[in-house]
Image (cartoon, rainbow, N blue to C red; front, side, top):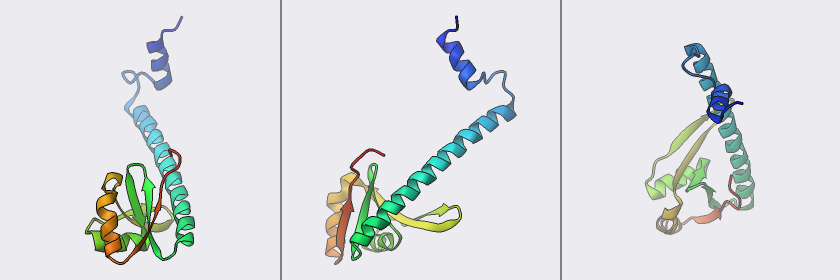
Length: 131
C-alpha cells in the first residue's frame, strides 16, 4: 500500500534523485504556465476595462484588481500627474506595452477626492466575483 508521502514524491518527483536539468525543466514549465495564466487574466481585464471605458469615455476609470485600484493608458498618466504616484509599464508579447498605475483599495477615500478636485470625473469598476 502506498503512503501519502510516497504518493507526493511520485507526483512531484524525488528532487534528491532528479538531475538538475529535470528540476530546471519542471520549474520552467510551471513558470511558463503561470505566465500564460497571468497574461490571459490581464487580457481579460483589459477587455473589461475597454468596455467600461467606452461606456464612460470622459471619466478616469479606476479598475479594481484584487487589493488595488488600477488605471490604464491615458487614465494612468492623468492619475500620476494628479496623485503624484508612480507610472508603471508592463511589456506584452506581440502587443502594445501596458502603461498603468495603481493604489491600495483602502486608500480610495484619500485619492478619489484629489482626482475630483483635479477637475476629473471618475468611474469605478468594482470586482463582483473573485478572479
